[in-house]
Length: 393
Figure 1 (cartoon, helix red, strand yellow):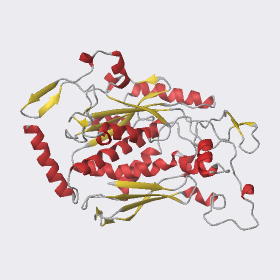
Figure 2 (cartoon, rainbow, N blue to C red):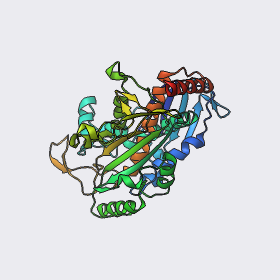
Figure 3 (cartoon, rainbow, N blue to C red):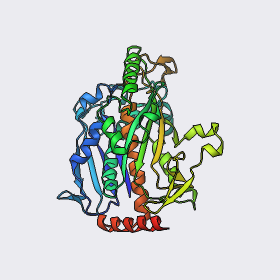
Figure 4 (cartoon, helix red, strand yellow):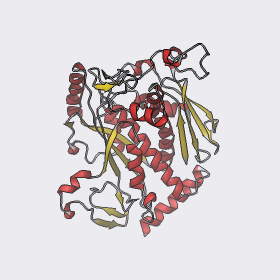
């Protein structure tokens, strides 16, 4: 399976094309729209979420509610496009119009964004050409693609959930959700304002977001994704670029503003001896081999172990501030306070939704790499046989 996304933040639409999905998989727009709505939620979101009510259109690859094996095309129309048709128009400018006279032209790069380096790389003197694509608006389509992947995984008995574990130094205690299943965590998270699995800590996170908003500043945080039901052996140790934890890390780090990733105990492992890091192996006739603990986060040697996959990512504070940082105008070379675009004081809850979906996409791709996947039923039969094999190994 592979996919591409296209579209600008204030362009007419966002598009994704997915190739390689098995035929006969149930898929409707409603399944995807539910996840898009979650991405737009969470305490701390700004005005853009009031403007855009994302709804997907499936324009190819699905007939009568099921995939047919050909590429699936997903489209989300930008409702705000009507206010940007002249600024972001597709057609060439009339000869009597100077490009420097276009409204909302940007020559002042914002610290922490792709503006300046992107302008250098692609030769843009109007930095809007950079920020329109580098915007987190692009993650809309990766959530849409991930929603399709989650539907694929559910059919195979694999389930995912994401939640926020830290915002601005306010941190959950892992004991508050330890032992809970993915479904139990999801039930809590979906009714929480910051998608946190600890209701008491959630209140403190909400207050931290409100406080930082009043100060014109922003907050980052940490999100965790858990994947249950993945059989052992997905991924490979035989070549560096086939290691699943490497692919999952890349997916997490590809999300806008993410600057770190860890599995299981993560960086805590640096403080502990090996006896407190590695997971002892046990066996029972009912479930076969299993680990007594899950400190490594469900991955060993670049492969799944059969234990839940636990991966966390850290998101930096959004760099667009209402008390802007200093920058330099690329035309005058004079210092200037950075341009303010619409911003959120905290987008960590929304980022947790994006994280879940990019991880689901990578897991789905890895499974399709392992098993013949022309049809869903054929794939499920292969997976069932494989599960039985590893249970009896």
